[in-house]
Length: 142
Length: 142
DNA sequence: CACTTAATTAGGAACCATTCCTAATAATAT
DNA sequence: ATATTATTAGGAATGGTTCCTAATTAAGTG
Image (cartoon, rainbow over all chains, first blue to last red):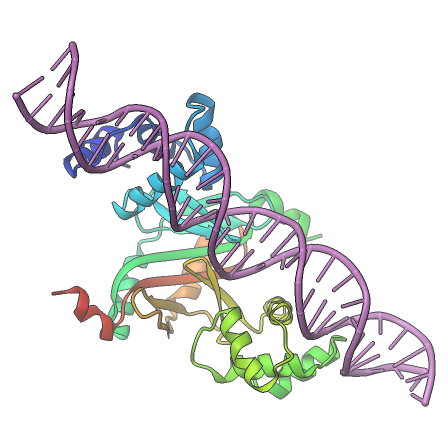
């Protein structure tokens, strides 16, 4: 997990401006256990900074994605964001929408194997499972 | 790989009507090596059946997804469909858009491990890599 | 500190894949 | 052949995301 200071410093080093909007968004992403959508990020940030626009949230997320400081995943046509950028599995509850992270060492190996077999230069990976979480699954098993 | 006759029979058994639109869409998905979008499917089907509507394509795809006869994946906010429903890795070229399938036995194991760790009941999985294919990667390596 | 300038932002319009709606059509059972 | 009811065509509506532009402001300079 990166620290806010490191991220700010590296952005500044690359010539990006450090704005309160950017700091607020990065801070929220670093602290939350959720995998929030752009809209949720916007809603949360607005409580403290009511002037922040949704388009700024999207722009900031684009920047952070490009710098590999956040991952983007897709849940039912909506993008969700995660500052946990190590390779891991995202597991989504199809009932309550919760998303858990699962660390799994073998993902790296699989990626290497896939690169070899396919001859692709691999730049991004996404491992996603979905189903019902322990709380919800009882409702669907009688 | 399923045969069209099996699919038609199983749909009929479950009380679904067999329409030319459904046959055409299933046939195309079974034959193509591509991972077409709904719009591409629509375009292709229309060459032979000009009356088929895009909403019918979407509805048929929903049905096929529900029956686990096709998989859906997401590429840059657009759904792509694949009649290859065994567990496999999809690898997407970020330059030319090509998608290759890679078989990888260990995916099953990973899924079992993830289910155990997370206590989720897992119903769907998606393993996606992206980067540049062998044709395109030279352009991005100087 | 005041000034400059160019990146960033707010706000809203535009976009576009997908879903929704409804009257017309056609697959199937009788 | 007829009746029933699932399915379809076509287009409108939806909603997440992107785009556009004038206003703002971070950061460099003297």
